[in-house]
Length: 232
Image (cartoon, rainbow, N blue to C red; front, side, top):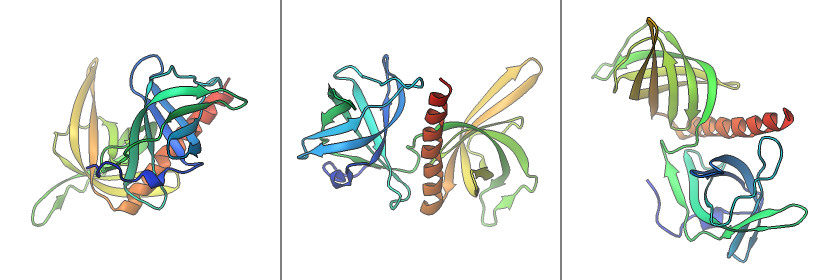
């Protein structure tokens, strides 16, 4: 769900961290940045991001930028807006310049930034009824990516779309135990073996827990970019 146009503009402020996504073309990808300054609510100056090798990413003018951010004191929400690049303000520290947005959407639930991870994942299947029956065997898989809305995992067990699962996993120092539902099921055969992949949406999750997952996702984004820079 998105709130009405014109709302949330007051949440933009100098120093706010942003995730820039370019969805197509030469610059397709995700980039971390932040707001450098706001000029009379007319233009936003955004720190120019860097490639993995440390070179600055100078997008072409008119490149459409999808910008998102979240706030620590507002669990369970990501804010997003789209603006084309007007120009690059050259200088010692070049900046991207875009129009101050006319509206910002507050995105809830499953519309979240995802990051690739490889982490152990434990789950139990269960059914919905007046007295939910949880199948007691705890099984193991691996998370392939995670977001504030759910996980994508692989496991050797075949399950069906719409199956409910109790998920148990650890991100950093935090342990999570969240109910979810399989929304997508994929089977991959390699020789005589079959591996299954599942997109699971979190069905029952409190805002504080979702906020912790979102925070982890953004931390991983920042860490990955920093490590890639150090490798060059």
